[in-house]
Length: 150
Image 1: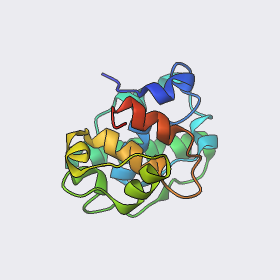
Image 2: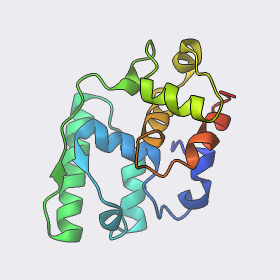
Image 3: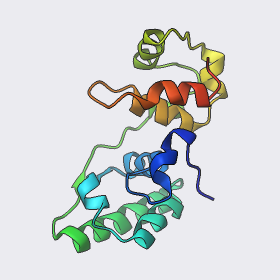
Image 4: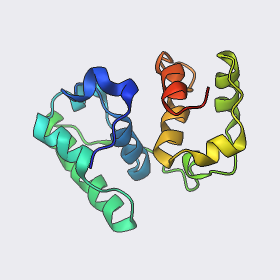
């Protein structure tokens, strides 16, 4: 089952942008996928990237190989590999990252540890991605509201 967020609603039907769950899988398997490469894929290929599991070591390796092959087929260029975070912040329910706290405070929200712990890993991943400097942050307040953190 695909888990899309409400703040992604304007593009998930067409999958014209890379949804958070795929971005999380890409970070998990250490592959960079540009939006231009994503847009060269068929809808079925994009949907497969949404649905394929990427949790266990075997699944992560399989996902990595699949996406590498897909990028090579569609672009003629090998996929860029990224370092894999051994202890990603989105899997740490005990510590609210400073970047999240600061971003939340900018919109008048105090994010407590118990709120952070109650989020799913995918929700925490989304907040981390949406709080990065240089990222279009318009969806951060929408995510905060959607996750009932106001």
